[in-house]
Length: 418
Image (cartoon, rainbow, N blue to C red; front, side, top):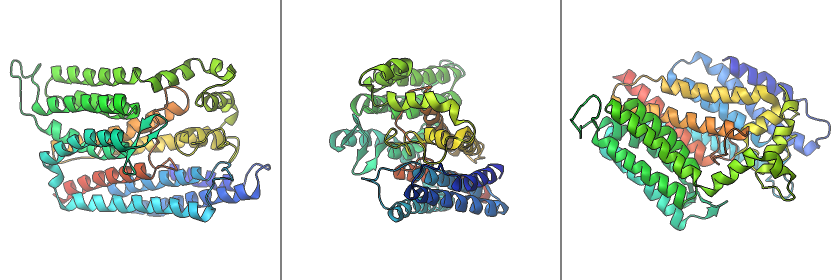
């Protein structure tokens, strides 16, 4: 409630305090984003009287999408390739409507049916991820050296939806393989299948598709944590969680993309002083030079040039927030995202399958927002994975995120119904 009111007040303040040097077209362009943010903030305030975990998750999604809409119109767009304002607004609204529809649909489906609990469904999801990565490598177009999509669908979004079901199926199957010492060394069949699948996913995404973001999020973060939290025995928890993290680090550190981005971070000034600095060194160094001057309220709306940050509303989402709107808005948006993750993790469930499913969803969201935020401020290499709902150009990510949040609401609804 407090965060909603705070963002609403600051949005109204910024909507009328544009820097004097901005043109009328840019001011009008940005007012569209602020208007949508104010509208969604008011809607969130008015729906506070409606109680329930599903409504709280829905409001969090709506508020972050409103911030993402604002960011999509909060920089000096390029005149030669910018769409008309009406077309852009229509696209953003359709994305928001799609997210709401998917949230409602999957929440209702899981509330009425329980087919998702079948282990066959989870293991099918587990097999679907390597297949999607293989198809992307064979048929998908290369984007900055990575093979991210197949048939127009972003592979990360597909894996994002399938992975929680795969983890739930694997860790609900506690059939013991090793009985030498059940408390220390027992291993379940599901754990063995899951670690083998993670190895395939790490190899195919990191080595074949050159996309280490999937390795970091799904293999390192999700794999390491679910093994540690739900392993069959103390030995399996320690061994498999460490194995998942080391596997992620090995694939990641042997990536030429990561090596290049680490070089930028460790030798940022040298990169800047070179005659031809890398494409990633220029925006990062510029941001580091001027971050102190941004203060609590930023340099002003639309002051971050898209010519310097071509993906200002996507990969550099938190950079845009902090630079234009200050540390107050940037950190607040991050805290709202993390509060949503905490709310997901605390959802009560009626079975082990549902518990692992919900916890996996919370881990995925948390890992995405954390890596995006710290990658933007130069603490870790950018993963290339945009922050769901906040990113203005992430239609497939928004759709996948809405499906997962709908699943959380549906699982919570089933528990209350029972």
